[in-house]
Amino acid sequence: MKRFLDLADFTREDITGLLALANRLSEKPEPQALAGKILGLLFFNNSLRTLASMQAGMSRLGGSSFVITPGAGTYQIETRVGVTMNGAAAEHVREGVPVLASYCDALGIRAFADGKDLEADLAETTFNAMAQLVDKPLINLESAMSHPCQALADWKTLDDVQVPRKGRFVLSWVWHPRALPLAVPATALHMAAMRGMDVTVLRPQGFALPAPIMEKARRAAAASGGSVHETADRHAALEGAHIIYAKEWGATSAYGDVDADAKLRASLTDWCVRDNWFDTTDPDCRLMHCLPVRRNTAVADEVLDGPRSIVLREAHNRLLVQMAVLYRMLKGDPQ
Ligand code: CP
Image 1 (cartoon, rainbow, N blue to C red):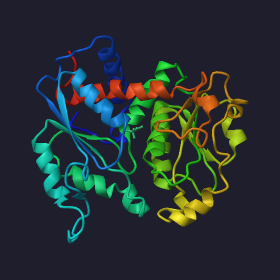
Image 2: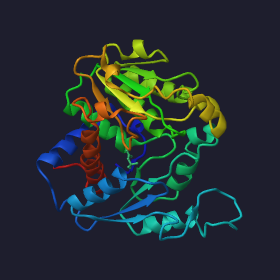
Image 3: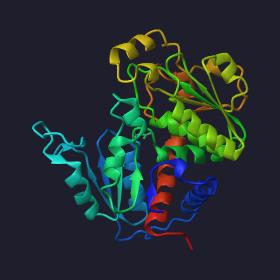
Image 4: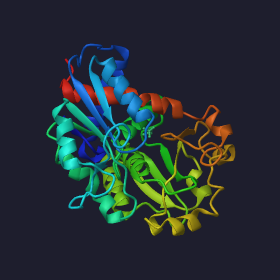
């Protein structure tokens, strides 16, 4: 495996194979498997889980890593093509990325959506421009529309708590003071569809996921025996749900327009997951969220601190599944 960029690049069997490897490495650690290997990590955006779990995973396999956060102890790096660099950035990705790749055996890059031009973000313009400069194994640590490491951890979490393969998965928009990117909701949707689940995207008017994202998920669902629906009717969506996957995202009907987005979300503060959201779900329904989560805005304390929440297991699984990705990339198939 040379690239881990989008769940859709893999078959269902590829993914279940990675999850089996994650379980195997958890039960039977291989602390020297990647001895001498170096992972480079380039973070254009903040992180807690992705940064710490990639470094910890590489160390647990005997390798090492370095981290570059442009503008924080290193030069600001320009990502746009063809600009006159008379601003803050002293380095361009066209030099910076291949230089970093030449120092390591695999590179991970986080570069969120620009959030201004939906077409450009759907086309992964920024991430793809960097990806083509990398001649080493490459991991997407969250781009405009894809967060495959999160999705892999989410799939493992569903398996861990024995959510039925064909169970009801509700991806619900939840409130946040500002527009957040689409990568996690898009990838969580695709993951659940690919797992074969009965998926509902629950979101207010104005916050529908872009048509190409929905169509891609529907194709994955068709291939795995699942289904994908969307609605703004919370009561109908939550009935019989096995999972409520809470996520904040920006108004797609006002993409890049901060004021219009703010107006749309101003009256939606009741989109905060509370205990009463589970009144008509399956009795064992669980709450998932990729973290970080704002308490009592997106999800109430009573849910995050209660037995339904599996958010900490999800976050821990990031470490385990990424170890499997690194192992498969840098060592090949396990013996
Ligand atoms: N879920 C996730 O990717 O967390 P971080 O932004 O902290 O890496």
